[in-house]
Image (cartoon, rainbow, N blue to C red; front, top):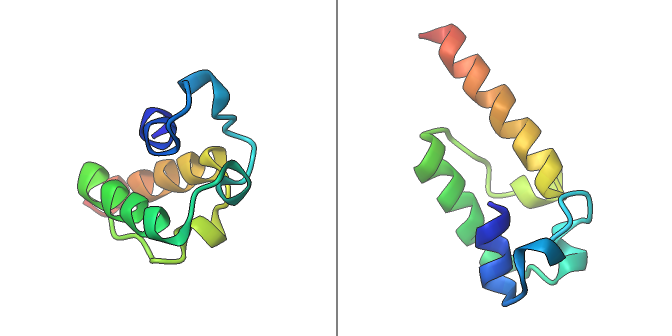
Length: 76
């Protein structure tokens, strides 16, 4: 996801700090919706459209994804 965000923001990957809120990095609402779709498609999990507000940093989003995958695996 860091690479994707860096590409969207047109900055080098090392400029994207996983602990800085995406809104502070310059991610707008249009890209936030796109990021939600990318997460859903890549990880095959359902993600609420408010993900970027509920999990404002890439680190928080990664924790959410990990938790969702563990939950999904336990349910299978």
